[in-house]
Image (cartoon, rainbow, N blue to C red; front, side, top):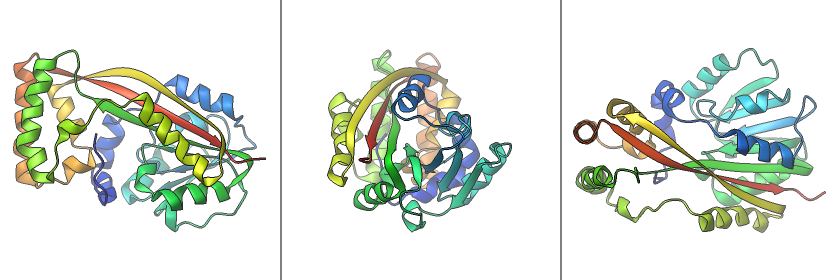
Length: 266
């Protein structure tokens, strides 16, 4: 799904839908992180952009102290309630780049489908300074791709995107391709520019199938879709729902989840 800069605020307007319809991440991903660095009740961790907490519980379950940064006030409140039983969990409501952290204080800083909102030079440099020697930065994200198992349906939906989405945003969504190994490797290598070592990356795959109504609910959590003028968006979503129902009533997304790991030198 494309990223339109400057729309960070939009997610917070649909916090409850985001929490319900946005997916979590695979067990294999967390295993790779925790094999790369041991996190336990002595560890100090920061999550950048907690959103609805889709990537939070497996980290909290290690017993660590977890400080989450979240720009959206509604998301912050949602997560404070969602994880209230974890006494070592807290949320700071602000942009990551605005928050002051002590240097060399944290064992792990991680960000799930959120770090693209942070300017690269500010984000990587700040994470590097925050980490202890040997500390780890984990960046990961989900990249959904259209229904490859029903290309006729996907092509019909492409036509609707050309008619509504592309016309509104002035871009061609067909230029988007399924997330690749090369893209994951390129993203992983960014950390090297900022002094990180032991760079690793991996891809994980899954599918998710939605009814027409569920798929529309999901689209309503994407920043670039929320930003479309309401009357246009309503008609756009209605046409997508109608088309999915015409072609069997279900739409499957093919997810590629990328993980990048990098370590601050000892």
